[in-house]
Image (cartoon, rainbow, N blue to C red; front, side, top):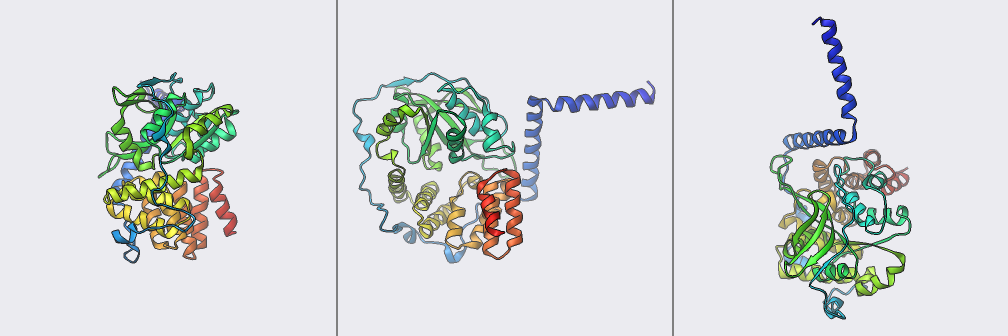
Length: 406
C-alpha cells in the first residue's frame, strides 16, 4: 500500500473516530473516563489528607461545645414530643407504590436522574437532561443541592410542587409511602474502587424510595446508579442517611398539600422542623460525643437559626472527630459559619481543601472568594467568583458577590 493510501486511511479513521466520539453514549463514557483520569492524577500530585481541623485558637473542648445554647428565640431543650409516635391507625406491614419509568444516570447526574423518576410518578414526561440543563449545565458538576431540585420543580415542572425537610426517620418514611408519596432522600454512596490514592470511598447519592416491607425490614429504592428496585435494609438506610441530616424531599400535587401537611404534623412548618432537628442533633452528640456526623448536623441546624459562633464550634468538633474527604463537596454550612464568625483562616483552609478534591465546585469557589475578600484580596475574590460562574452559569450567589464587589 502506498504512503498516500496509508495516510488517507489514517485520516479517515481519525475522522470516523471523532464522529463516533460525539455520539451521546460514547461521548458520555469518554468524558467520564477523562474525569476519572484527571481525578486520579490530581490525587497523585496533591495527596489527600484529612479534613483540616480548626485553628488552635478556635478549637473547642467537648465542654465548650456541649453547652451550646442558641439565643432566646430558639429552645433546644427536648420539649417537643414527636407527632409520629401518635399515628391515627397502624401502618400496613408492606406497601409498594407504582414504580415510575427508570432513569439511568449520566455522569454526576444522580440528582437530576432521581428527580426525574420522582416527577414521572406524577405523569411528568421529561428526562434528567431537562433538569440538569437548568440546575447543573456543566456535566462535570458533581453536586446538586435539595434547594436546587426544589427550585426546578417549582419553576419548570408545571403544576407540581416540592418541599424538603430534615430530621426524617424510618417511621415517617413509611407513613409517607403508605399514604402514596414516594420519598427522595440524600444518602451515603460507597465506591467500589478508589479514584485516587488513599480514597476513603465515600460520597453522596440520591435515592427514590417507593416501597417498604416490615417483615423483610427493608425499603425498596429506585437507584439511578445501581438499578431499579434496590433493597435497602432499615438499618443500612438509617446509617447512610445520617450524614445528610436525614434530609428528605417530596413532590406532590397542589390539591394534596393539606393531606401532606397533616402527615408531617409539626414538620410541615419549616421552623418547627428545624427546632426538632436541632433537638435531635443535640441529643445525638450527647449520646455519642465521637459521632462526627451528629456534630456536623448540629452545626447545620444551629446555622439555620443564625447561631454562627455556636454553629462553627459544632463544625469544629465534627472536624476534630473526623469527616469524610468529600464531605464539603455536598454540604457547605461549615463555610458559611466560618465566614459569618470571621474565622477567615479556617474558611480559606476548608475551601482550599474542598477545591483540591473538587476543583470545579462553584460553592467552594464562592466561599473561597469571600475568604479572600475578608482578607482584602478583592482581585482574587473576583477571580474566584468568575470561575464559580464558569462552572455554574447563572449561579445567583456568585452574581451577587460580583455585584457587591464592583
